[in-house]
Image (cartoon, rainbow, N blue to C red; front, side):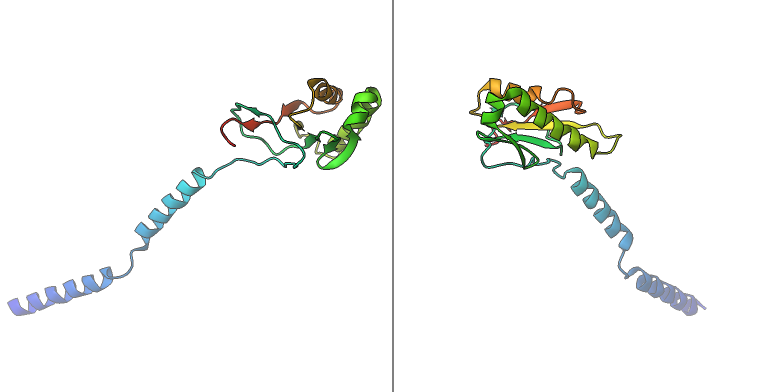
Length: 160
């Protein structure tokens, strides 16, 4: 009887060992879940603004990352809305009211194409060598449009 019970014990142990030799997926899935979560949280969320070669930006200390918004570019020769030319800088300086009206009309047409519930934000990128009164004339042309916020794009200090 004793040999029979010891044989039964040995058979049960052998069956348990065979069952436990399989791959433990639960622990592996836990590790991969934590890894995926860590990678998602630590992902970089910087949104690059579209850059024109003829518009080098001034440097400044900024705290917020840029958003993906429509961009009003101002090179030394031309003003663009999302890479579409609007007026020349010379026209903006010489025929200020007419040029501002054309820019305002383009901005109004752009916002009319956007959804009604959107909170329109405009980013202005101006060449760093332009005089402030020229940039001010461009900013004045945004008055009366549906843009609720206007951001001036700069290069973050130390990012160069």
